[in-house]
Length: 134
Image (cartoon, rainbow, N blue to C red; front, side, top):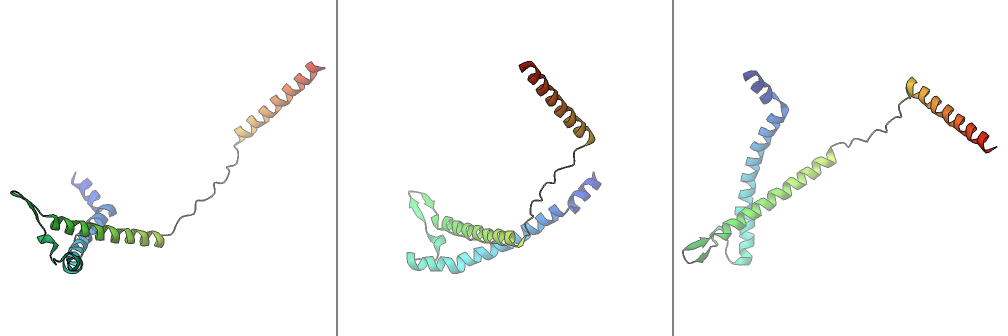
């Protein structure tokens, strides 16, 4: 069992996934900082508040922190857009494989014999039909 686990871990896909998760978490920190320190102040200029996380709707005893939600939505949109650009760029860089034209395989000796038999039977049937018409 330990040997199978070692083989599983050594596989390239698992290592690629681990690297992707680590880079993804670091990228998320960068995007969060971008949103909090640059984008929110720009939005705050139009809303009159610089800190969106402070936006709260209070109904009775309930506090709805829609500012934090807006921060999360902005973070998501930025991350999704950057991932879209990365996938688009990688797709352009990757060589596309031209589908090879399938070569018609040479007929086997059995197929050749069967084709000849079929043709002979057709000829024989046509000859029989012509004789019955006469």
